[in-house]
Amino acid sequence: MRKVILQPSERILMEELWEENPQTITQLFHTLNEKRDWTKSTVSTMLNRMSKKGLLRFEQGRKAKLYFPAVERETVNFAETESLLEWVFKGSISMMMSTLLKARKLKPEEIQELYDMLKEAEK
Image 1 (cartoon, one colour):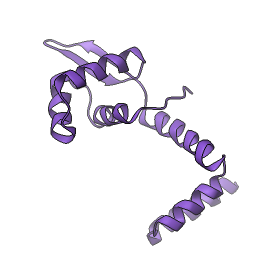
Image 2: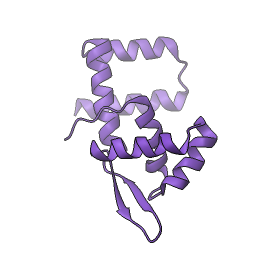
Image 3: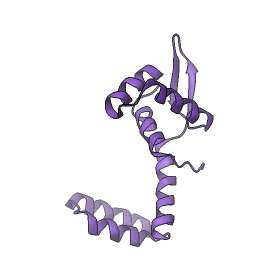
Image 4: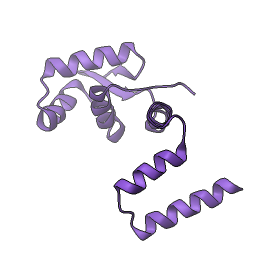
């Protein structure tokens, strides 16, 4: 599995493509300008850089390029979670969970979901 760590601005753009694809530069510009006040030039630069990095791909449409994610959200989330776990928690899942549980109040269904995951991990 390819290890992909996104920069914050790359994550913002990828989230848009993961939610809906393909999209043109104009579609992405309108969304990102509204949400983040990005210019068309910023979106264009990001798309070019991310294409070169292999994070997204494009096909020539009838009037404009159509952009698609080239990496799956799950692949990126896994790599970024592993990186966070190693960097911040020295690889300790229990330390990470302890920190999260101290910081957040869990709903009963979330607690049950965690119990079910732990039971599955025991198998």
